[in-house]
Image (cartoon, rainbow, N blue to C red; front, side, top):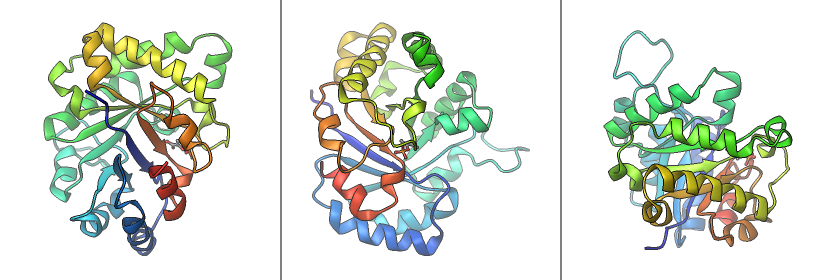
Length: 250
Ligand code: PEP
């Protein structure tokens, strides 16, 4: 069974409602014949409009985070049920910016993944090493630890509903891209870890792993040609309809 590619945009803290309308309306015709799954992950405030605008199209909508509790005294947080109610299908979990600036840990990533799956959301789980970790020869150690922690207690049956994004922290928003070869080799480490956690066939057929980190219209085709790379998580280049569509139509 071939793994269907999936290209997702991560808007981060960008786009007002008016900007969302312009971007999504521009994007719809440009990606309508995409051969991959297309997702846009937007700030919470843009989700309802993004869902409304993309209804009946091939664009799916995701959030950029989710809390693990069903409800309660968690000021400023959003539950999985609230996202599902809006028509949201995907959610980014464990993005390096959350790990770096907002205290996200391997443990909280796992809690969010469980809550998302229980509510019927599809997590896009981010893993990736920092530059210091790469230079210290710790890539494998970090990725194995992050992957095992994120999937702790997750059933094999859920694998079709989960996407992993390998995002080397040093390549995010920096204009530095991992070479296609480095991205491919590193993603193989994650896939091997999934084979060990589940089964080799599951890892080969059912685990989609994206590359993320300054992916853009110029380098998308080369990255997507690599055997281990099943898609992209796109930050900067997802903010312009034309650029994002070029990545989608790599
Ligand atoms: C990201 O934020 O997930 C990302 C990959 O950003 P950029 O494409 O801007 O490097």
